[in-house]
Amino acid sequence: MSTDLASPIPLEAFLTIAALLFCVGVWGLINSRNAVRVLMSIELMLNAVNINLMAFSNYLDGQLIRGQVFAIFVITVAAAEAAVGLAILLSLYRNRETVDMERFNLLRW
Amino acid sequence: MSIASSTQQICFLVLSATTVVGSLGVVLLPNIVYSAFLLGGVFLSVAGLYLLLNASFVAAAQILVYVGAVNVLILFAIMLVNKQETLAAIPGLLVRRLLSGAVCVGLFALLLRVALTTTWALPGPPPVGEEATIRIGEHLFTDYLLPFELASVLLLMAMIGAIVLARRDVFSTDVITGEPADQGLIEKDRTPLLIEKSANEPTLLSKP
Image (cartoon, rainbow over all chains, first blue to last red; front, side):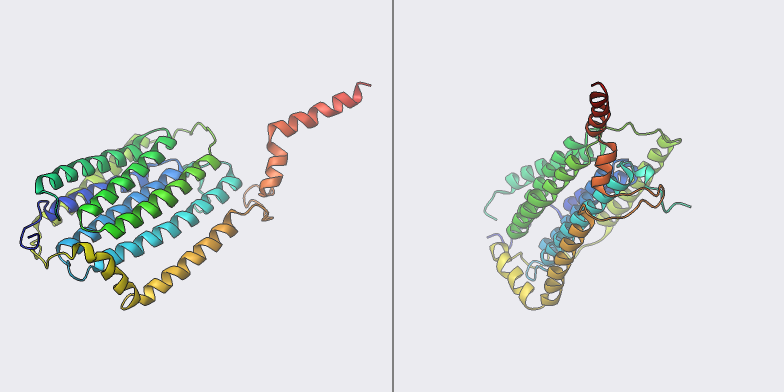
């Protein structure tokens, strides 16, 4: 019954939500002063990419769901990135005693 | 797919509204603790979107990994670096925000145009639905075996790297100031409680 029935939600709706989430993440990545918020924005962007992968996997690749496998790998890499990023943030905080992104300017010319 | 279509649409609307409003809150709220909890809400609603896309296993993995691990990690990091500091004003901050906002709106318009004007190959093959977990297991142990093992090595590397980066007894000096960057030394030098005690003790000793 469900195979011949078209999905009630169009594919473009999921793509729109993912694009909006990604753009909000990019804006937060550029404009955040707090380093923890920068990491949170990166997580938002990774989630947006995952929504795209899952939507394409369901709508265009329903039998071999390769998008879901890719989403699992993205989740894995995101977990590793969060752990290393927060460890770097702790180390930075011990060195500079701040989480202000504007004062992490050691590599600025 | 036994849920009625109108129910699915209502669920999609609620979940997408929660996602968008929550992500805006994550980016815009001044208190970062609220941002972290809203991020958990965004992760949960994204997991709900995965359930709408017939992916129960990935939804469970999303909740376990993101809400259970990443969000808790972020909360711990906020607690560890929670110092109330007044950020110095930057010249041209408003211009920067407006410019980046314009860039992001332009990027969104571009992505939206691509999503709406491309003729997708719809309808594709019918989704497998409940068998998705079985298919993912088959993929992970046949044609995606090498990335799967590489992911485990990556997780091990990330774990060791996080421990090495965040441990306390690394004796090193700050590049700029030249003073020791070790956490124990910083605490001995700059904690007000210890300074007060060491300042009081000579007076007590000198009185008699």
